[in-house]
Length: 478
Image 1 (cartoon, one colour):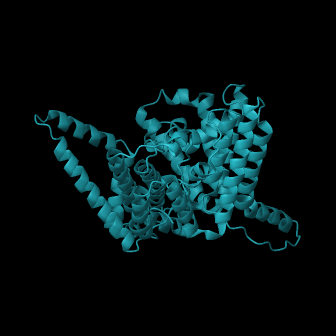
Image 2: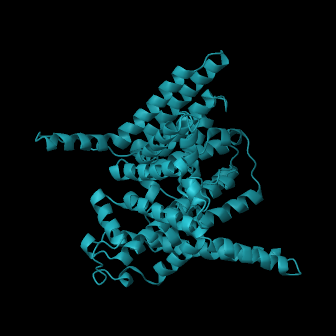
């Protein structure tokens, strides 16, 4: 189950909220609802989630007990991390590894026996990272080990962030798991954020997914320069609003339930370097890799060459985390390469250039990287890049732009660009200037307009979902 479905919006969520606020046992209600939410799509992997929770509960207790006795607790930490990573490796990368081994044997003319494919459990990348961060923070004494197994279970399974993040640190919500405030103002704000996220996902990301998917399915010989750029712009906006919208829905639901989740995106397409892009994109994942991998590897405290190596290692694993495919690995290393270049002096050179040039450089590099992220193979990615840079003989008549756009997709494209780029800041500034210029306080009017607007976009989103419109979710498979 995902948030942008009729089942969730009109059946699961209302029933859950009624029970949640009616009963005093709110953690228990949230835990049961989260397990139902997970089992709705993958009941066969519910036992895996429960086993993961119980194992990490035990590892956390062992680390906490060792700390209380003046010992380091490092053996329990290492064992806990190894068990979590072994589980993630087996379920997420077994097929990838076996395919690689099979290709090696086949290239040497050896026959390869068939093996049963492993199904990727829903949300395993996210709940594994949650568990590892909990164990490391207990070891570092940034938080106490959780002795209440139901509280830890609630943290790991909490349905607003279970299958797609954001990645929440246990220390962020530890106190709120036992005592949190439920106020009308928080509920009101949470509902508003949720509706905005739903609209971002349904009205922008889903709409732009149609031309993006169609263009990436076009044969390489029929792909023109203009259509290729249209395709990657649509996909760049689709993946942004797909995950940004889902993160906003998670943050909004968290507020309704009394939790405060951190912001996950900060206008990344406004960045003027790749370094800045990763300070704005998927913040919870970036900080996770920084705190639990990059800094333990030595960060930037060692020799320059070691800093560059650390960056490449982090982004190699970041790419692999996103998917068991060499195109994902290349996507990660591609970003890592440009971060190394910027760290080695490129960023200082960038700062001497006009802001517009720096901005265009960042967008072009990011969109080139998205080609590999979206493509199923290097062959498809290379053909797409050939078309993007005019090396595909300009087959303009073969796949005209008009065949991929209609009124809805054009409107979503314009609005998506407007919201993702500086035009958003211009609009906000104009509204603020107008509000300061009026002599009479108009806050009540703006409040009414805002709620009417929210009701309208919620209605449009619900109608779109009810009509069976295209509703993919990119991060669902991670």
